[in-house]
Amino acid sequence: MNKPIRDEGNKMSDLNEIENGEDTPPVVYLIMGRAWKEEDGEEEDGVPFHVMVTAPDDDGAVRRAVEALGEQGYADAALDQLGYITEVPEEEFFVQPYKDALAGNVSVITF
Image 1 (tube, rainbow, N blue to C red):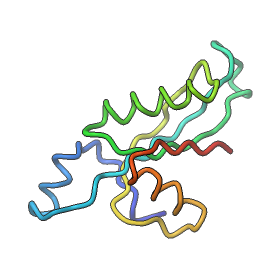
Image 2 (image 1 turned 60 degrees about the vertical axis):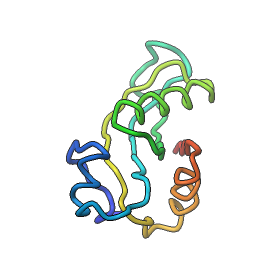
Image 3 (image 1 turned 45 degrees about the vertical axis):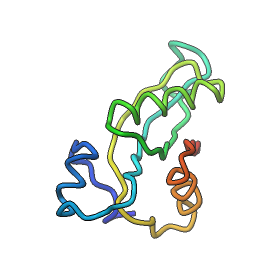
Image 4 (image 1 turned 180 degrees about the vertical axis):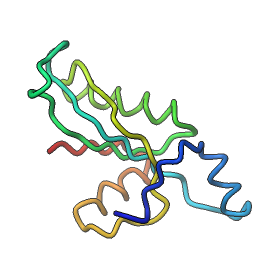
């Protein structure tokens, strides 16, 4: 997923301007971090995760990601990186979560 991920802090409206105003598919945000089942968990107990989600802006993406993690039983999370994906990922493992995110779902991948 080298090329598709951008970590420039741009909002969805900025991306649409980058694309010269043409019709573009929704932006899929990729949020990476660690999550814990208990608040104030030990650093080494954190579960690495990726979340793929569509949202109108960065804040909405973070909000949807945190809600989805909470629904899966995580009480605390540290978000390490936020970027967005502009095309179908090359790695097969990430293709279906990307498609699910485009369909409006929140894809949570834990490692």
